[in-house]
Image (tube, rainbow, N blue to C red; front, side, top):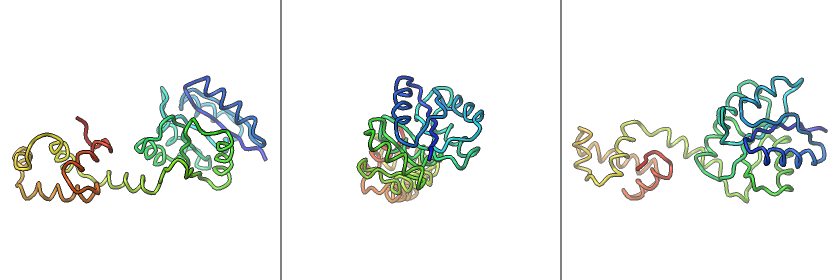
Length: 211
């Protein structure tokens, strides 16, 4: 068995080191290396057969991980796509999973765990590392809830992050206080919070608003 791997990462020392490491695993070979998503896609197009697994850094110049993932998913639906990142950030994980990745690997992963992850990705189409406490179902549900927030609710959230009273927010939005109360209760439910402070903190954590 020869599992073909392609890698895109703009840190060339890491890229070369990772390539050498994976090439040393039994049954693996590196078929393409690139420093950004566009270069990787161009190199894959010139291969006689696409790789089995593609490892993509999240943050790259020219074409980043999410854009490259989406394009590869569209052009080569049979490829297994896995994200590489230094950070375990909910929003980044959600972005890469929704773009088409079946796994999210931290760059400080142990070589033994990396080999296990690559084999699982190849054999089953996904890899969930329980040790990282990444609950993919929770993150996807969170993303769906975030998407369900309307523009008007976002406007309310932004104003709720100020020192305005709910009465002043109603006046600024040109709606009744009852309507503002409705926005508040809906967002309490969508964000799973029970207070204005909790709502503001959760909105900031999910990057729905910024101060």
